[in-house]
Image (cartoon, rainbow, N blue to C red; front, side, top):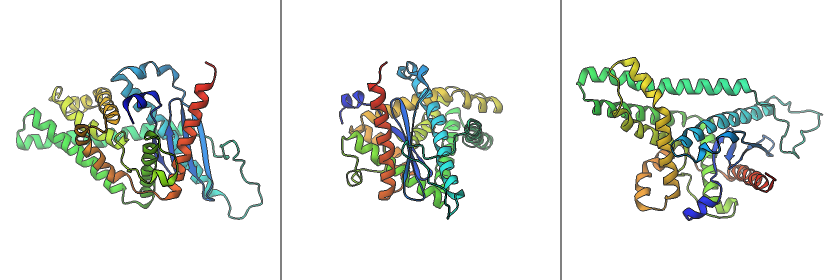
Length: 320
């Protein structure tokens, strides 16, 4: 797919859910979740952050906006899929009640709780900052006292510790059966987006030819963040321990902005040999976060992408 073609059409991305896939389009997000009875529930919602559309065109700033959007949208989608799973578990095996009406795509799933979304997002951010940013700083300070390292080597050691912790965390959770199924949906999401970007039909047989790794994956984004952080921290590393921890948090928006631009650029130039060499570690890391999906999981990803594309077409045809 040429750069011009990529620029002319919306760029789709997504996220694996509990027995489902979320796809984000230009102006809508589509969530597809498979019920226990085999039916696929599809929920399509507009993205309400219209006031940031101008900012989304500004380099560096758009990275922070996109990351914030995806954190909120992704958390809501995860809670939605969890609600569907909980609803399925709570339904009795023998009931005379009529089934839910699924013609409008709603399927009777419980409404999302704003408090649950905000609480889950806040807890996740605090836990991630404490684990992957504060802990490496304390560990590096201890090693600095033993090795008498320079500022450059201190930041490299801190970055290496942070990267090792992240890889170990991904590898550990990948051992859980439920997470392995989520990783399979992750692979299905990537393969389906590959097919759309290469103008291939969205069928299981067509999607099967593509890789489960994608250069614009969120896992790749995190890896780039960890590498960019080492470079940025070289220019500002306060000697005081508390100030050093705070500095890691303060510069996160800048690091996220730079990392997003790198990922975005590499996604549009993935056919270049040099770019493929640079993004090689990103794609390799995705071997931990993706699994080969089965046909049913690919079918769910197709429904999610179809829902997002159809909603974007309706939005484009609607009067301004």
